[in-house]
Image (tube, rainbow, N blue to C red; front, side, top):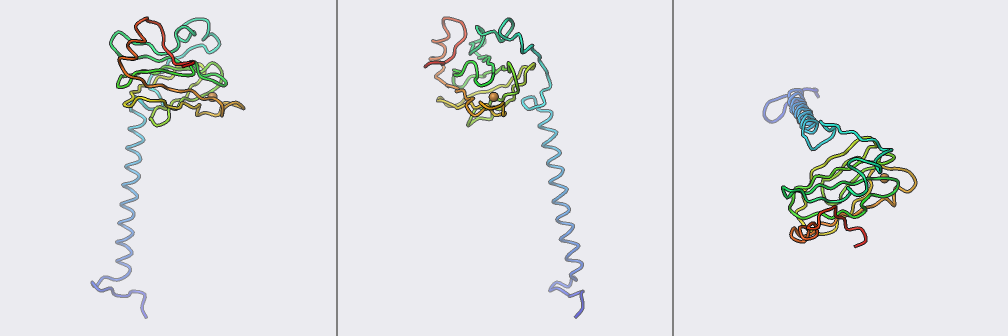
Length: 191
Ligand SMILES: [Cu+2]
């Protein structure tokens, strides 16, 4: 019996093997090209890390002055109708621990860490960013549904890490506007 067995259509098993190999090689090259394109897109796109724009802050002076003093933390309704949320992560909590925002509104989350690396992840959404001491993390978000979203710390930050949770409360737009009437920063801590 010869190794070069003839198949029904006349091609030998060597030719069949070569054809199958070429096909798989083509698929492998396509996968590599696709992954390279995805990596390029992820690296260039504004909303993904690494951030094209780096903002720094002094973690040891957060509570004394600047953007992240306690009175400036929480949600702020801007003049253009957008909302800016400022928050801090520290071992082992977020401030504010409950963030309130309106539904269907462009929201800018600005956050940093007061001690070690933490992370903010809002469950059920693609909001996911690291909080690195010394740097300000900015992420754009928009919620299409009202309700409560859990916000755990997603970077192991020492022994109390598993207890580091926050919450995002997405409420009705007019509700939020009414609450924001008095000015100041909003949160839902204690509600
Ligand atoms: Cu943490």
